[in-house]
Image: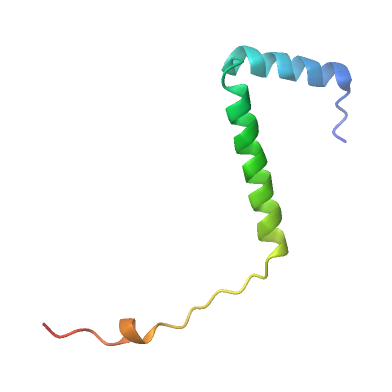
Length: 63
């Protein structure tokens, strides 16, 4: 993939464990998983944006 083998991945995981600690790893993993799922969901959804103004917002209300 990026030229990373098993030893390099182990070194990266040890550094992450030292920086964040064992207590934060589940939170970080969950946040990364939610981000990936959200990204995949946004890719598969149609990208339609409605830019027409609503009727309530077209006319200013009088006091």
